[in-house]
Length: 285
Ligand SMILES: [Fe+2]
Image 1 (cartoon, rainbow, N blue to C red):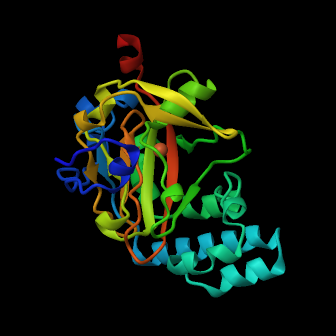
Image 2: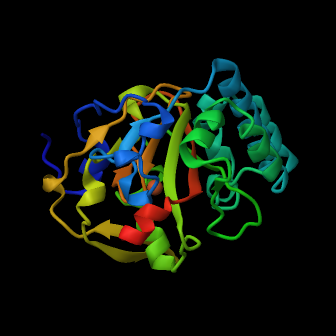
Image 3: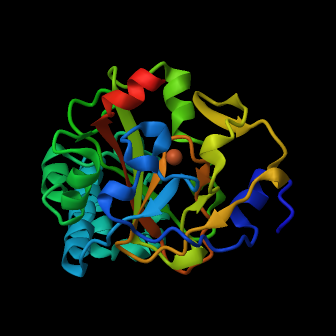
């Protein structure tokens, strides 16, 4: 295993490829078949999902491009023209000529309701309906006013585009967001433009059951989380991500992006599924 001393090591050291997470039938996603947040993904705490079709992924690329062009229009016609003229994978070639931070601010990274509803018509969501129930929905923890699909854009060789190791649960805990009583959460990440181990997501299988400590760190007016444990005790793996192939993971699974060593920009989407947990699990808890 690599020597992980710093967060730079965590995002860039060579780590083994994630194995054993092949997609399963939707009713096998939860340990013992009990739909409960903590049981998601069994011992690994994660599972690949069925891939989006090529035409679905192409459509998502179009929608993401249109979204970035629309956001850029809010700054200037020149910025919008720059974004319109470049392939999504080559966004890094023009990003210095834009206000990248503003274009991809938290608000700029949230797809419109219209785009979200169109994505929900794609085949992956048939699987999601079987896994999470027909009444599942996508979270809106920031209170935007509609279900959220969030974008991530990671340019080649830009450290600041990759965050810090965390569990999504930490954000909810810190901000005092809570799921409605009896509801659970599961995350989905999917690379729309992604190049395997060179910029795929890194995850620690089994970490959802370890309850590892963290510290809250202030970074200007942003907050970030810092793992408060020896990083070398972590069994970190890299998801050899193929475009359009989603991975679903437990809300307590530790994960982080990969420092992008590919020649192309990584563009990914993230979703939090919200669903009714089984009564039986709640009464036993
Ligand atoms: Fe996350």
